[in-house]
Length: 155
Image (tube, rainbow, N blue to C red; front, side, top):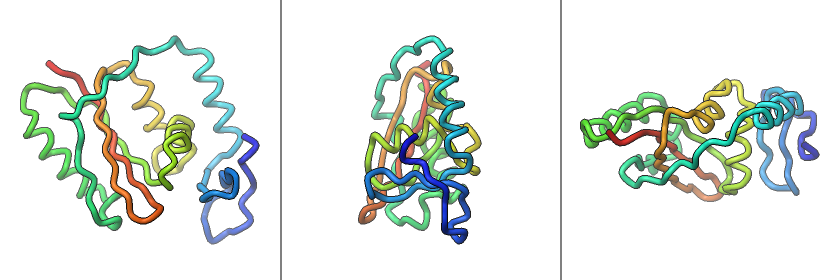
């Protein structure tokens, strides 16, 4: 939480920023309040079984950064994956993260999920009991990185 600061640049459209050791700054919607909420949720929940990595659940992230967050693009990719997997899997959740390539920061930011767009859906996906498997893929463009995460189960 020591890396959360008030945002002094109104053009960014975020009230707070996460500025860790001079690295890329990440926009936050609620700041410390959201982090405390996440700590409370995690402290009261029972440990979950680990998710097993399953390469068949990997979905390809588009090469073009322009397409990373386009709903119609990843909807089409997910439909193709669903068709490819047929009746062997149930697909439970999907989300993405666009960041700066630091896996630790990406994981923490997804679990805290202090973002107006996702509204706790990434945290909910990660902490859900519905899925036992996960496929994780990424695409880099310079310093930026996009991660697609698909959660599912085998029938």
